[in-house]
Picture 1 (tube, helix red, strand yellow):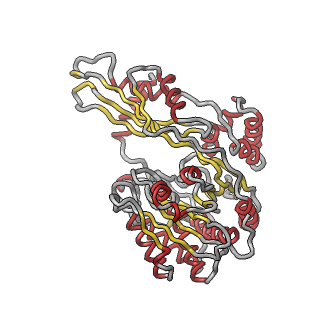
Picture 2 (cartoon, rainbow, N blue to C red):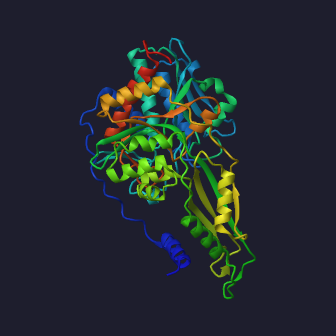
Picture 3 (cartoon, rainbow, N blue to C red):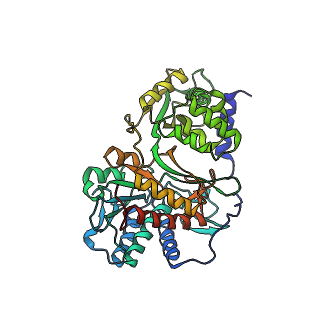
Length: 482
């Protein structure tokens, strides 16, 4: 069977096949049987957030932001410190910024999470994605992992500080924002451009980091996100005059596009390490299985070691950290079942190593495809992060101390996220941003952006306590500010 025919059949099967059987959850160990008052409060906030649909175009971030704002008002936060702000022409995409006043002994710390989620079709899920369920030691629902766990934890902890009467040395700022996952009203960008004084901080704590569990559910390492790959979409388009399907022509637009996508699938970008990923592999080699460890040490010493890259690429946790990746995500084309296609298009999503640019990747795609009838357009200008800054020493020290006490002393390792966050927007605006959460998961298990997204119950409550203690340590009385 030719590759072209294989792709055609696969596409047809994807359209016509019934939904796949729902996965059976392997029970996740360690969920608490009795919740403390703080855990009960956090769970209620978490459930409220998950059960408000905040997907772009069909949901409302504003509704969720208003619900959270009501909690802060009820807790006694001054109205002047609660801000529901955003573009005037986007009433469903308002952002919440809450300031928790400290003793003003240093610049504020920003606590960032996004309220929006990727869309979830009810027909794809075993249960309503916007009803949070707890099953076999997991929370299930759209956003339970990305990013409403972080949003709920940060919200619950600020309310807990207020209830306990704890006053930090410096102000804490909570920002819950819109359109991180997509859409035309990104909250962090809007705040930077219009109300930067509300979020200006020495540094920000964000999503993007977390813990990795080994094959026996034991903590393996805890990561702090210090860099991230660049997100860029490319649209591939093929046009021709079409015609009657009874008279096929050689330059069928669907076949041309299919061939182009196959070439992209078969292309492997070169390894590109940087000041975060090189030490990441060096440090992770100390806790990984021998075969992976040897490959990691080899690739850190020589990025051109193809044998080492091949071994690392077999593990999805690490494969995308090696290089730029591009993958087809959407297809559209044809206008009638009895007509030759006149217009077909595909979206190719690339996650670009921070040492490269979108224009460089576009040039590679054009060369790899090698067909002038396939036009490639990018929807974003070049965006390159600055060089990764060293992790703030107080944050690194506190993360290391808490990891030692809570997670069996596993190493804390700076990492580069293969996904995109709003951290790059803050870094570009002069606010260093680090992903750290205390939330541990096994490779690929959360299925963020996919069907039946889930998060371990234990992981949520571990993250709740970790971030409660972490924020206290980096901003509390008696703690050095630098």
